[in-house]
Image (tube, rainbow, N blue to C red; front, side, top):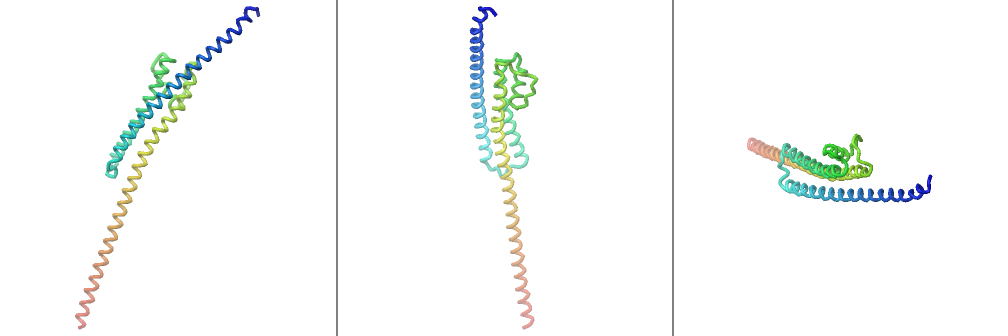
Length: 203
């Protein structure tokens, strides 16, 4: 090894370190921007969905038929899918700009990472590879928030159905008790009439 090579070695090491720091800084910046934008989009979509569900549930939900309840759950599910699809598209746009040459690869990788499938047939470049696990973690959290809205809606509908069945059962019980009381009163009246008639005959 020559003296010139030894002299250039420290400079090369410094250049590699500087390049690594720059790459990590760019990756961290992209990660922060993506996470913040995802949170804003998810919170805005969830707020709109909650407002809509409140306006629906605040009405006379006891009168909803089975078909209407099914349509309501279906509409909420479609809204959740659209919201998650928009978030996947945001991450895919970033991948298209930074990593991939086609929208198909970018959207495919974004969808497989967001849903934590991760087939591994499409991978990010080495300098952006930390964005994949980050998107998977964000996807788990965002899907959990969206599914909780569906859980609350279905729970409310089930509670309403149970309450309706309970009210119907109470009404049936009250009607049965009134029928028993009426039958008892009629029997008592008939007994009094029969007793009165027997007394007249004896006299």
